[in-house]
Structures are given as C-alpha cells and as structure tokens.
Image (cartoon, rainbow, N blue to C red):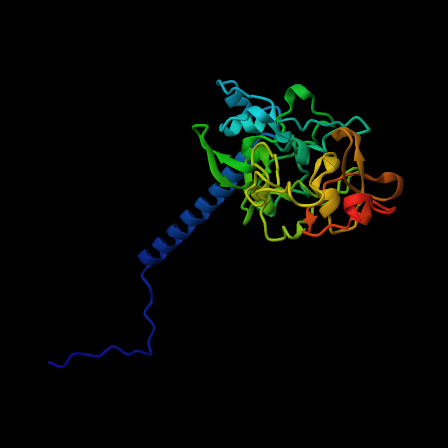
Length: 307
C-alpha cells in the first residue's frame, strides 16, 4: 500500500493545547520579570543614605588599639609598618581651611571621611539607588581617620592588610580603583588640587623613571639620598660639606628654576619654593639633576674653594 507524502506547502495548525501552553509560559515570564522589577525598587527604596557616622573602618586606628607601639622619632623606627606609619606624615593629616571647613580637604587629608557628590561618583556607582547626603562642613578631630591603611591597601574581613596597592575611591561604599603604578597611587593626592599652598609634584630629570617608594619609605615617608641605596657617599663631592649643612639637596639640584630660600618650618633649611610673588611657599622639587649651578645662590663672587 502506497504511503501518502505530506504536502510541504501546507501549514500545520497548532493544537489548542499547545496554544494554551505557550500563553501560560508567556504569562509566567512576564509575571516573573515584573516581580524582579518590584523587588529591586523596594530594596532600592530601603537603601540607607551613605553615612560617615557608620563608616568607622580605620584599620590603622584599630591596630593601634591592639598593641602596636606607635614609636615616634625617626631614629627609633621599627620594622613594623604600623609604627613607621605613625611616625610619618600620613598619620597626622587633620586640617581645617581658612573658612573653618574641611569637607573638601578630606578628599586627600582624610579620605575615609570624604563623601563625593553624586556628580563626582564613579560611573560604576550610577546604577545604585542610594541617596548621598551632603557631608558635614567640618569633621572633628575625634572622628578623623587620617590617611589610613585601607586608603592604599585592601583590608580583608579578618583585618589583614594586603600588600598590593590600590586606591580607595569612595570609602563610604568601599569602592576601589585599580592602580598600575605606585606613582599613580601617590598622585591621587599629591597634586596641586587647585588649593592655596599646594603644587603638583613632577618627577623629572635624573629621577624621571623612579617610583616614589624608590626614595621614600612607603610608610614613614622618609627619604634620604643615601639610605635609598642610590648614593652611597656624598661627603667627598664639592658642596656636600659643613658649610651647606642647612641646604637641602633640592635647593642645589632642582632643574626647574624654582626659587630657593630658607624654610622656617624646617629650622631655616634652604629648600625650593613654588608659587609666584607674595604667594610662594616651600615645596620640595622632584625634578632633579646631577649638576648644580652655584650662582643660583652665590650671586656674588664665589669665595675660596667655590671659585
């Protein structure tokens, strides 16, 4: 018996059962999508405003309370990174501006207490529905965290400070930004910041390809031309003598032409100055060269061995 071949030109009409099944699946998917949207909106509405009152994650201050010595004095620095941090400038960065506020200063001086506006938030934060309240104009010293460990390092849930460096971009929500070099990390703060008494740090000249921590101890921030391991001995080089004991290296070796003069805050040590006219301020140059121009300071006939 010959079997009848189906005509491919004819359409097969779906069964009523299949149609019902497809409709049910579509309704379920739509309901599920709507439920997800509702849940998201409800949860977003419950999100608390970002609050610096609850943001108490100062790893350094916590560890200090757990027995770190916090030894002061550059001659007695231990190998403990926390002790070195305490002895350095990052452990004491509290400032108040001339108008009695420090909310803007905190971006560098106390990043943990700094709250950016929604316009300054990273793009990755734009999907969040929380509300950022304006920060108080003044953070009191008792609530200050200075430049804490967690500003430059991630701190795990057990309180261990991880070695790799990163930048705490928004402390209130633990938003970090990856950095490619140590210099990039340092320059998040060490810029002119369009603030009076601040200037950009430009690494140039003989040190152009060096990292900040090649010269500076990363925790105490001390820097020494000899202890860095680059310059073993300087005593036998002309100009490195008792007559220049009150002259900083940068005052002779700066290559930018900055003004030089005594800095009273450093006990009259001669350093470089940034700014112009009456608005100059001490600012150590980081653009240095091997050669120096003695006539920069000795404008008259150089005496004795300096002729």
